[in-house]
Image 1 (cartoon, rainbow, N blue to C red):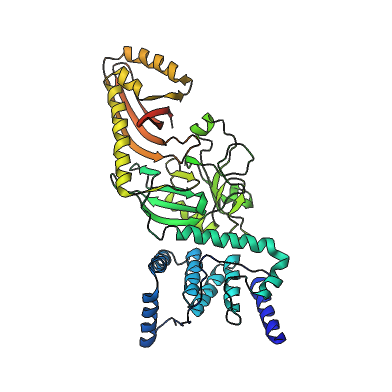
Image 2 (image 1 turned 120 degrees about the horizontal axis):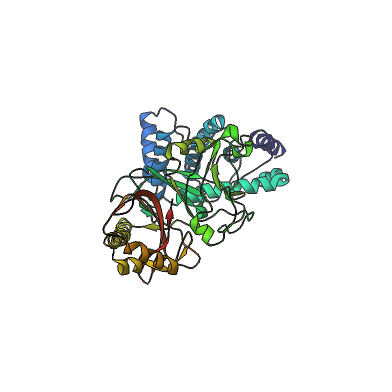
Length: 450
């Protein structure tokens, strides 16, 4: 017994430096182990096929997604980690260990991978019902319980976020219409510590999920309201620039993409603060715990570099919400039609100088730079009086549903290029509207330049 404990202790010390990890989300009772060599013999191939047949629907969907991710990017470290956990859950301990051994060589700073590998190696000597559950691990890890707990949280966040899409939700409500000039959009689900990347497939077609990442958020949960509250804001934002790593402190890792917090709606609500960025991780680490920033959204450096291919400064939207609201393809299409019909009534009544119909499409709570609803009506009445004709086109349209707001009203953001021609003025303007649903009718809440 003493010799056995010494061997285990030495193994722990070498592999993961006095730390341990508990990953309870995927851990289940182990099945008889089946070894899968890199090149399978015919009999082993049958066993491997039988193993695949034994997977339940969720496990098989996860297995296929992970293989697809690795086929697209062999350096997808998170996919390798999750694949090893799936192997362990379904009894393929040797395969899980091999996957993690390869991963830790490629990503030596990935602490979570090292810790999970250590526990799986311990499973060869001792029964491990969940990571970190053995008495030896508890003894060894006591001095660094804070670090262990942070890694537990990271493991749970990665698993929770990744498993959320396995059952096949359809479309994020936020992404209603993307302009032909907007190839991708980023959707952040704070409850899952996950960022989803969607590709624009064109008019009338729901966007397609092409990538997703574990992300780190503000140390405090909830919506951001004031400077220094350590919270990540909820809202519809746009990437406004790019800062390379050589121009930043090491904290920001491989670089940063600032977003336009506070936006027009944030300022209207008197929210304060600034400097909300998407950025990388200090290069001395691979990743960070789920809640560990002052409000920014943080990725690993490898994944920050990867999202660069999806981002176009000034165009790419970043929708951040407590929890993503998902809708069916039919509901997504119906909502698009409803909103675009309202925008067309707004455009047409304006073009036809139908002042009454035009002003009915403005909320009583409307505001713009220098205007309330009352002053806006006076201003537009004067403008309309001088028009003999107007020609108005709205092109390059993007429609984004806003995350749930405190007063419960439905809100959305419309971005477009407004091409305006009249008897006494011609001009093009990139415009932004905030629209709110009141008594079953969409109305303009804010109007201004982008």
